[in-house]
Length: 101
Image 1 (spheres, rainbow, N blue to C red):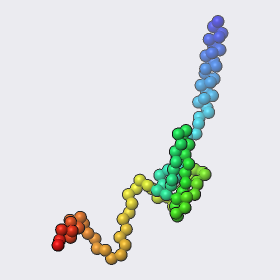
Image 2 (cartoon, rainbow, N blue to C red):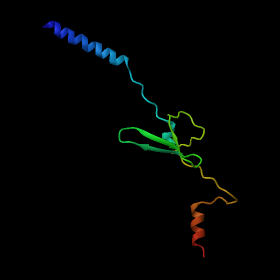
Image 3 (cartoon, one colour):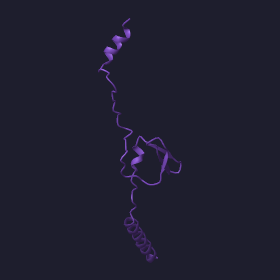
Image 4 (cartoon, one colour):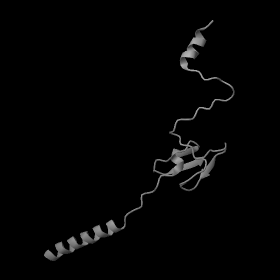
């Protein structure tokens, strides 16, 4: 009877050692997830389908992207670019101009 308990204890220790040795890799998050040009679809089972919309077309991305030359962070504030010869104005000047007859 004590032999069974020793055998179960040894089997549990061996199983713990094997599971600790076979550590699983944590998958890296693709760069496209945070890109403004990406169209990402998430499935109910945890899979995702990523398409790149840079340049006007929609192209499926079949790999996890780690670096991209056209990456644009979707969480960063967009830079406002003034085109032409418009002068700088502030909200007070705009309100004054709108109330003038």
